[in-house]
Every structure is written in C-alpha cells, then in structure tokens.
Image (cartoon, rainbow, N blue to C red; front, top):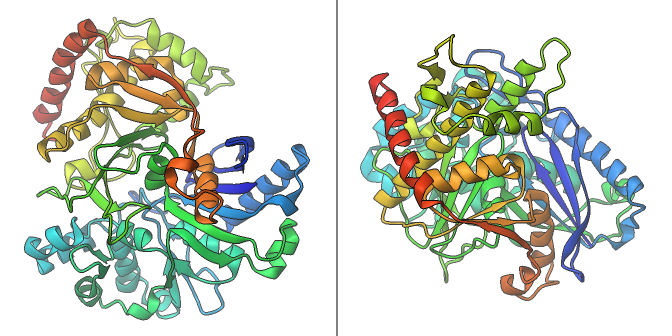
Length: 496
C-alpha cells in the first residue's frame, strides 16, 4: 500500500493505492470548502505552510479512521504539489513568512529586469524561459523588499519540498523542482550560476537535491510514530502538480499530452527537445522521468483563470442562501446554444497570465445585452471562454512544431462535466481520452514505482483505467472555428 499526497492551493487530496490490485481503494479531499488564499495587496497571493501541514494531518486522520486502514502496511509516500511557490525557512526549519504561491504576481518586474540584464541569448537556450514570476524571482523579491527576512533564510523550498521536510525533518528538493522555479540551466544540466549571481542568491540556500523518482528520504521517527507508520518508510516520489498530472495519465514520452482544468487550466506536452517560446509565453521544465540518457521535458501552458472562475460564479449565484451546485450550473450551460448569443467571456481574473507575457488582463464580460442575456448565458460564455483560452495554448504548440493527436485528462475538476468535455474537443478539434485518476493517485503510483514495487513505468500503468474517448463532431468543430475567431478578435480589439 502506498500513500499519495496532492497539495493544491484549494485543498489537500490523499489517496491510498493498492499496488497489488493496481487501484486506489481509499481517498479524501480536505477541507470541503476551498483553502483561503490571502491577498495582502492587489496581485499578491499567499498561504500559510503550517495550514497545509495541519490540513494534511487532519485529512490523513479521517482517511485512516473512515477506511479502517492498517497504517503499518503503507510502504512509501509520494508527493504532488502546487508549483512555483516559495517557502523560506530558518536554520530551525521554522517558516519565516507566508508562502508566495503560484498565482502571486509581485515578482513580475523582478523577473523582467533579470531577463533584460542576462539577455535573451542566455535566458532562452539555457533557462528555456524568462525568469519571469517564478520561484527564483519570488526569492529575489524577498531579498530586495524584506531583507530582514531574507537574512534569516537557511533554505528555500517549493511547497512539496516543505511537506517532505515536515515528514522527514530534512530540507530537500529535486532537479525537476528547481527547473520549475527557473533555477535550472538546461544546456549545462545544473543549477544556473548565472541566475543566482544576477539575483545575488547564495547556492547555500538550495536544499540537498534528491531524485524525483526513487529518492529514499525517510520519514523521521517522531512523525512515523504519530502517523502509525513502520520504521524506514520513505518519500520515493515527488513532482509538481502538472508534471505529476501528466505522470498520473502515463504521459511520459515525446508526443504525449495531458490537460487539466482545476483552479488553473493547463496543457502539458512531453518532448525530448529544449523547446522555448521567443516571448516566454510557455514554460518548459524537466519532466519527472528525465534522465541524461533519455531527456524528457514538459512544455507547460497555463491559464490561471479556469476552475476558479466557475467556482467564483457558483459562489456569486449562491449569495443570499442559494443552493446552486455545479450540476445545476452545467444544466444551465446546456440550455444555451454555442456562442452564448454573442456574449463573450475573457477568463483571466486570477493574476498575471503567462500567455499574455505576464500582463494582468483581468476577467471581462463583453457584449452584454440586459434584454437578452440571462444567468445561463453568463455560465455558457464562461465555459467557452475557458476552453478558448486553453486553445490559444494548443496553437502555440503547433507553432513550436509539436502537433497534438490525442489529449489525456483525469476524470476530475471541470473534466467531470460532459458539457465542458464536449466544448473542449470541438473547440480544439482533438480527441480526448478520459482516465480514472487524479494527482493524489498519480503520486501514490509514483511512490510505488520509486520504491521499486514496479520494475518499470509500463508495469506501473498497466492497470490505469480509461473511462472514455470523446471524439469531435465535424459540424460543431466547424461552428466553433468561427466563434473562436470572433473571441480572438475581441481580445485583439481590447488590446490584450
């Protein structure tokens, strides 16, 4: 039995994976209401790492008790986590400030300045990105704006590294994690000394680097006792949420692509190339199964405002003790024909959008007619806007010479909705394969692979269950071509 931990910005998800049967037998998402994101200033987004840990402990307790689990049978742990966040601790492993999480925009200018200083001739072929708004730039922001905090810093970590530290008592990270933070030089296959020098960041702040798959960072004795684990249980897998989502869908080789639509929406395509976009609108990271012998990079295209928009709409509709759930919302979407009778939604209300070169676009409803448009039109336009935004990413992949034949997605978040799936395949024109898996299940399966229970990835994924394949409708594909083009013209008209 293997435990998977998926640390999101909205909840903590846990899964227990029976490797002998090849399936998850118990899981939990906690808490039921989404975790709070603090915004001390406009464009900022922070969470307390201690809140993550406490919610993990509570979720673990509930999972074990409700399923009468013999915790001594847990052999290893896998961790998936929200990417690009910054956790800074002192020498006693105490958190020095709230985590600056993935959707925080404060470090945009810090990263832009570094990009211009280092130059595109270095940044693009070596970092495969602008330093942008990633973890390295967030750490530099702390150094520049909170020097008293920075001076106390012993190690920086990503959110998943923090959970691993609380379990093991030891700060560690991975090469994949460092690449997610834009600390990694892809040409030299090492930490970028040029970027560290640009920011004046000491290499001493980097934790010990361990493998993403197979690292045997043991759970410390006191925590193992508290969790009821046997001695020697280790963390044998670690990956950011999007690389891990791809892993959970068995997207491991060039030409394979995964998509998610949770709080943010993501396209993640695997390649052996050091691919980059001249405008740094895409992100390329080391994939979890990367090696010198078989290089694997993940090209990630992110839309911040996807599921968070649908959740925001649900909360707005339920103001005044309403009782509208996602099922009812989807029914309202279905009641409106494609195109939402001219209503257009730009779903970009969750911080700086990478595809718009880190500009804060904001979310907009355009062409509103008070005499025609009702709640259902707003919902339909929002779902269509989310898919249109994702399709901008697929167009970028085509420009990079990375064609998409099929997309894999887990049966979770917006992909739970048949309506969303149908709009997705007909806007993109690409078949969608739907699998019974999620991030926590992927992390648990990764733990089994990393612990050596499975001898290969092929064996590890032999039991992965495909639920359905959804094919595009030629008639709807043609209809959505025109609607999508109109949506793009509105973006250009408004200067986005």
